[in-house]
Length: 324
Ligand code: DP6
Image (tube, rainbow, N blue to C red; front, side):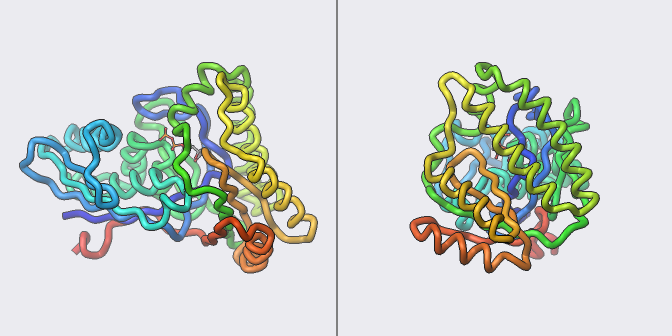
């Protein structure tokens, strides 16, 4: 029995769009922070059953729902030559309710447990590539701290790695405006953007440039620069979707009210930069030193929203029980 734990990550420089949907090769690199909360715990046990079974948060998934997980399992069987099926149980803590990308933590934990269960002997880079087959952003949750996912050009060259942030210790405040499941999945949203948005090409070219600029800011520890690039990548990603047919609009009026408030916070001298993913919730980048102040300010301003805080956490790992 192999059990692994992984935590979600929030992209600063975003991933939106694939050049290969089978292998999940992204159109651009991306840069993220792994959180130190909201873990997913996944246990994999090999069985003599004919089919893989997957129980997520206490509910057995249907055949259609397990397709993405089976891609990870099929790759493990191919690599190991062990044809056995897997019996999987996975539990998210409050990640789903918090509107956080639970699939990133889920597939990072799955790939880590699968590596052990099928005795694949993969290093973290290999696990990152395996997790990528389930969900692109999961490749990043294999690592802790600040992480860059190299888009690469094939299965071998597309993986994430830790990068050294040389600035103040970072933290995030999540302003959760809605815990509802998104109407359009990232996967469907990306495809529609690629197929119908005239802004997609501009997004890809400019975002890859933002990655390079962000890498320079990371090396210098320049938080103001990194924060501005984070907001640019976020706005350009959402702009590319707004150009799709029909338009994809994850941000609501309330989201924009929070974005204005973040700018106001900054005017008051606090460190605060905003980002948002495939939903209305706003994630605010700040420092550990200012976390309490930024959190208090935002929760007072938005009493109707849940405001969650997170520091930066570790990458996916086996639990001690699994290692023993
Ligand atoms: C908006 O990794 O969930 O959160 O690869 O299709 O599973 P798939 O998509 P996913 O997309 C995440 C997109 C994003 C931005 C980001 O995390 O970089």
